[in-house]
Length: 126
Image (tube, rainbow, N blue to C red; front, side, top):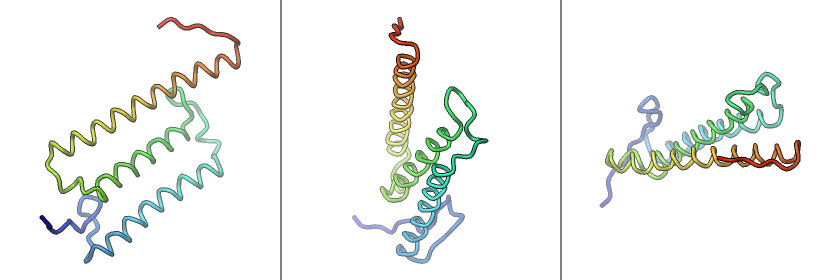
């Protein structure tokens, strides 16, 4: 059953007249976020290289910007905003949980591998 999709983004702050304009607006937003990631990746500002919660601040910025892009793509292009609240929560919270779990696993394993390279063989009892 076809129905009209909402033509605003950013919770109604920016409204478009057609689907084509909305697609261009979303493209520009995602391109800006990607450009910020690329510029930060190229220049790597020294102020963002300090440790924050066991990882460099720059890495946290990359993770947060990637999650923002993934959430926005799901919200707009997969039309999650037009679904029921329960379905939105199921999809979004499951993805957030799995992403956080993946980050935890990668940090744990990466820390172990780094300690093996620096200290030699290391055994951990969990």
